[in-house]
Image (cartoon, rainbow over all chains, first blue to last red; front, side, top):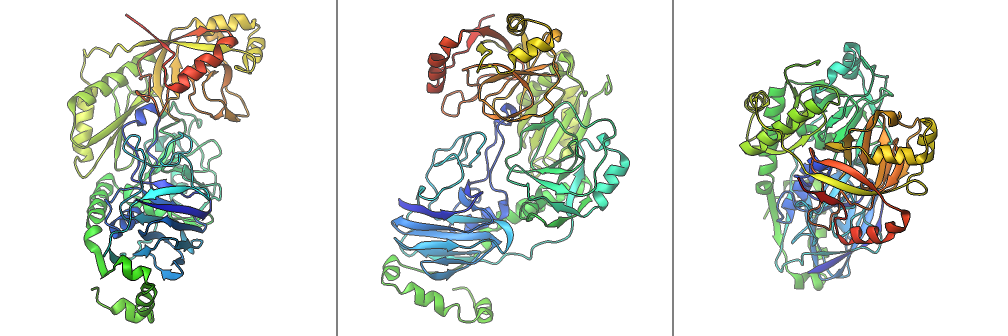
Length: 345
Length: 241
């Protein structure tokens, strides 16, 4: 195994996989990657299963050094600049980090979360099948908390002749975030429901992995803002007493005592999770039948990701150690247009 | 009752809610736990897990395996099955150190209700509580059966951090909080019992539908019990029968 050392890191950077299920009845939330699509892409690029653990990198920059052995890694999600051992590295591609080389990723230019996929995976002790960090529950492996400088992750060693890969993402969908009404839309006035759907909401800076607060006009409750607690899902949009919606996400509480006006459809959660503080968002209601159609389309899209990864070239450790990697990568980057049109080999 | 027949509600495209009512009522909760048991027994393809609460059952499912209409019809039919015995649940005796640094609100609660602290302890520990649900945070145990004379509205200003093991009251509810968290409840004491301990098996001790009574202990017992609990011992007593 190799060791990846965290050299510098910003907030909200932690090991996340597809999350844990089976204990929500005991109050243990799922956690897991905020953007499942980007997690799947990062994993597919390095030959990992779609839901395997990766490093979820928050909006600021970070750097990681291969302090023992070589590491093959990949980056997906939020757009940002990156370099690998001093060579330019690219979103939606894999790269090779020789021993003692450092991967540097800068702050996100758009979006919030990036995923660092690692060939051979991250070693850790799964609880309810997951390594995902949940700060409140004291869970996550190898560290039950966000990463700090000096942390060491035992990871897969890059295989000799490991292929370099890339993934051509489909255009990002735009338009309003789709929701299904309820389960407690009747706890708000009809005017409040209409207002919810016609308002352009602002994502509050007081947002985190637990949920995104939305700022806009005050939504009024029909008869008080407390309900007897019931279950929540990722995407539940609660309306607490202040009338400002709160969209619950990966680290939400499993139950809550505020009415839920609507629920973001599962297919739109990754896009919503990549919205930055200050960003504007609108919601549109779709029927449950359409939401389920979208869920099936989404599942098919996730399943197709590994098959859409292209191999760029095969690569040997020795060549990397002789320092020839840089030349190969530089040559292939001379002209971005030429690069885009170049057939995968 | 506001909804004499259960309501089927969508919680997005991956969960359905069967809502039996909107109040805290043992009869409602019995129906929730009965349905929970029936759903578990049916092993319905596509259902991944369920979350019972006071008055509703949330069913997480995979819409690529089962559609909402088919699953909803099945759940509603199960909710209307009659004559199913309610799962009996187990009975736990949970040790508590009351007052002082362990229960910083005991004195204030006693003053509010014109009682001595001893009377509050006697009334709180004398109750036979029903576990309505676990939720919000891992191992957070919502209990019904508080002596109405102790009912105390939640604090106007919730505390940003309250300690793990806090045993408190909020309105007519009582609770055991397993991990440090914000809370607007009044803290009467602390228990060394870990209702949630990720490095113990089982990770969670108490199930919805179980019963709880409290055993007051002197503060001198805290350290040994807390250490034992941290090592993975249960330290709560399971009462037979």
